[in-house]
Length: 340
Image 1 (cartoon, rainbow, N blue to C red):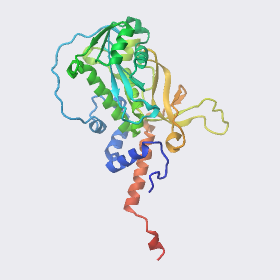
Image 2: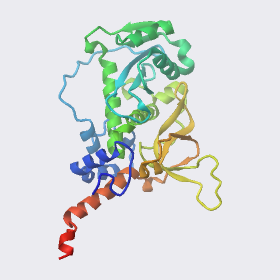
Image 3: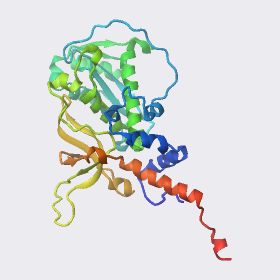
């Protein structure tokens, strides 16, 4: 079988297919993902499923001691931020970083794709995270990166810097970076989308945190309710699940209006307000190597009923694995043998 095989898939995808087939992950991971369409599939927080055990496995680390802490009580009273670095990964859109922002009062955890670490990009994204609360910003907290120091000057806010070369002084933000990274890995493993989708997997996890992560220990509702006073109004769907959308101008009298797609996340307005716009990619992108990637933002989207939910890319890979297993068990007869 050639590298292209039956399907011509986008860059980075064939290597991922080979890795999955060699590792034989489907027997456990696919069964876990499809066993039940439970809320843990949205964030994999405190889940303990097989996907979590594979994606989040790490070396032992020393736990910090528990101490009493006084938290901010007003939105934008204290905002911390840091960068998630994945510049070694070849991603769609050529993104190299994601800016992580955390509002302490609401426990909101926002992420933003970035191509550089320039102050202009960082300021744009912090302002988007704050939305209408930007004028109420009281304190910033970050490490000593030059772009963060410059940002503090631009926003004219109190800016607390962590101690240089002492990661423990910025431990809470670093922990949030780990949580988001683990969530993104679970998203990719569960959906079987390739590493080029990492920035979208990060943003999806961030949106699900916004919609579902109520901090019971602090008596908080979900970050969306804390910030906007109402529950998250969108449809909660796992990353990479199947969906259909209606493209603009699709008034063909003979063909269906809806087209198959793969769900990638939610489009959020400044202040992380959701106004029913979803993000997806046409399924044909995965079936045609000549088709360029196009991120679709639409309100005209529909998801299957819970019992019919599936991860289409994982299903396609499972079929490919079955074909490989069949040829391994039933090798074709060499041409020399047929011509004897």
